[in-house]
Amino acid sequence: MQVYKNFIGGEFVASQGTRRINNVNPADTREVLGEVILSTKAEAAQAVEVAAKAFKEWRKIPAPKRGAIVAKAAQLMLERKEQIARTLTREEGKLLSEAMGEMQRAINIAEFCAAHGRRLNGEVIPLELANNVGYTMKEPVGVAAIITPWNFPAAIPIWKIAPALVAGNSVVFKPASLVPATAELLMACFAEAGLPAGVLNMVIGSGGEVGNTFVDHPDVRLVSFTGSTDIGLGIYKRAAGRGIRAQCEMGGKNPVIVCDDADLDLAVSGVFNGAFGSTGQRCTATSRVIVQHAVADAFLERLMAQVQKMKMGNPLDASTDMGPSVDESQLKTVLDYIEIGKNQGAELLCGGDRPTTAECAHGHFVNPTIFDKVQPHMRIHNEEIFGPVLSVVRVESFDEALEVANHSEFGLTSSVYTRDLTRTFRYIHEIETGITHVNSPTLGGEAQMPFGGMKNTGVGPREQGTEVFDFYTETKAVYIDFTGAKREGKLY
Picture 1 (cartoon, rainbow, N blue to C red):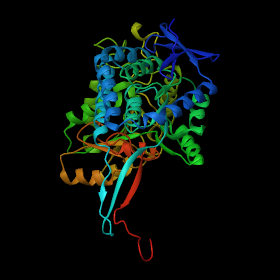
Picture 2 (cartoon, rainbow, N blue to C red):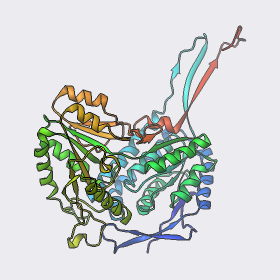
Picture 3 (spheres, rainbow, N blue to C red):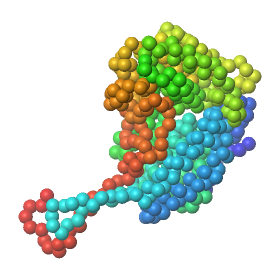
Picture 4 (cartoon, one colour):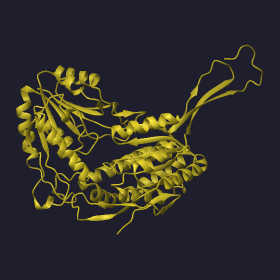
């Protein structure tokens, strides 16, 4: 059986921890893919110390050359795209087509960040004094601790690691313990790209042991986290207590408004993909649909017709439409929320149970579920489920739809389907989300665009795009006086 290893100081090394868990295929739990040894606090601290030492030399390497190494890693990911995607599918459960899409996004982000090594610019700023020059420059911060979830085990690590490295920081990385094989393959790409030993280190383990050790270590100067709101806020507080910068992307409860003038076929397609793609296990998944009464029945009739055609099973099979929940715990969470929805009075239109087919008998599968006549006070309307459960709220007017859409502690992404230009721009200006779409799903995003949300979805600067480099760099202001003379008068 494969035993997954840490990556410290440029080498894959076995953990000396005593706690072990199996890496299981969620589509067929009879298949054990390997064994994870949960690392100790001492091993996490060792990785930080190695990264701190490597940082001293890595920061001196010119940014274009750092970018070239990240570009080479992107090329290796491209060459191994299908291999990594298949590994990702087997241990996480998303469809192979979705895993291939995730890999392409990771590659795009790495390429974008690599090119930014030639654009890590400051600016020359006019000064009041004659024969004086003022300019700014970007410098790395130090050791970056990167903590990522299981649902996008390639794209999320890359959109943190790539900018951190190009900016000149060294990295300690804790992947989710459910996806160790994908993490190992990504580390191999960076190692073979020529990254100096110790600049990037990976330690597999629990948040309580490895994650907290990273955040609390005196050599760590910045933390980037993606995961649950409770854990993210806890990390943000720990980082603030140390006076270091933190970036936490957390929960989502993403709404789609379907107006009475919408192209219903377009809206159904977008909601279908947004709600049930990746088994609803995306922070950008569509979890709420707010539809005007005039088109609600027609919209739901078309959506139900799509859902009833769905095939669940082996996510490596091209004919499969939806894979499993990632593990037994997540499956239980989804089933529990379905019961909560029923008990609070929402109308169950379809799903709500587990499939009975032989192909799904040994996996963590749940049928795609739609609740109608959901009220804004209900828990399934307000709490993140992270599964294929869609809540439909019926409203009379566009104003009511906007009010319901903003009735959430979260604000990651959103969408509106309408042909009305006035509604479109009102929506863009009034919706309380960091990302919004018009006549397209809540999913997706491009490497050159910022990613992040409002309210309890996120704290700290945005990820991706050029804005991410503001998080991973310090700005230094430089004043050069070439008068050669003593300055007279009061100095400010």
